[in-house]
Amino acid sequence: MRLALDHVMFYRVTMTTFTLAILKPDVISNPVTHRTILSLIKSAGFFIQHEEMLSWSRNEAEAFYVEHTGRFFHQRLVEFMSSGEFHALVLGHKTHDAITKWREMLGPTKCYAARATDRECIRSLYGLTDTRNAGHGSDSLESFSREIKLVFPDYQLPETMNKHT
Image 1 (cartoon, rainbow, N blue to C red):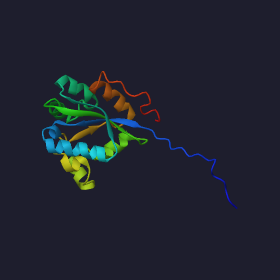
Image 2 (cartoon, rainbow, N blue to C red):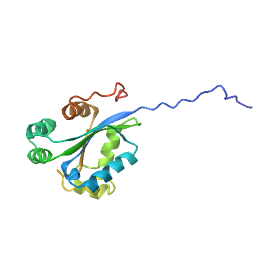
Image 3 (cartoon, rainbow, N blue to C red):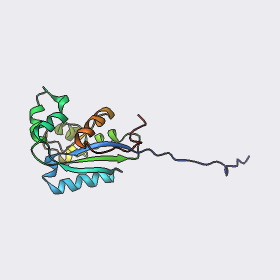
Image 4 (cartoon, helix red, strand yellow):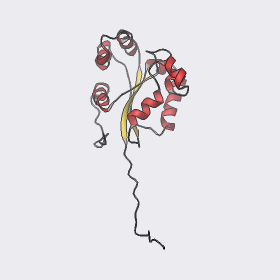
């Protein structure tokens, strides 16, 4: 028996999702590392929707990391993030979850754990300490929504941004 498929049309639906990525001051201080990480980002299928080189005051860094207030590393993290320039990016990816994909590329927050569990992740390769760990990535859509307003207050997200979740 022969099936006639000439009337069947196939559609591929692609959805672009977005995440916030921050390449921290330790990365920016080393231009070769900075370029290498940007190359890794693009090789993983991400595109840069928006980007800026920024510097934070102590108050801006405290506002960004408010959820860590009172934790032992908070002071050190705020001081580090307000110590120099960083590269903030809105990354887009044609997957169902750019947030997870970017965090997987970053690897575990603690560099020593990253080196033990994922020798190819960004933090394993380029992180120096638990604070100077090369990068930041929003951990959820809620965090992304809050963080994007702090990092890029005038930036307008695309209308279809992350509507699938």
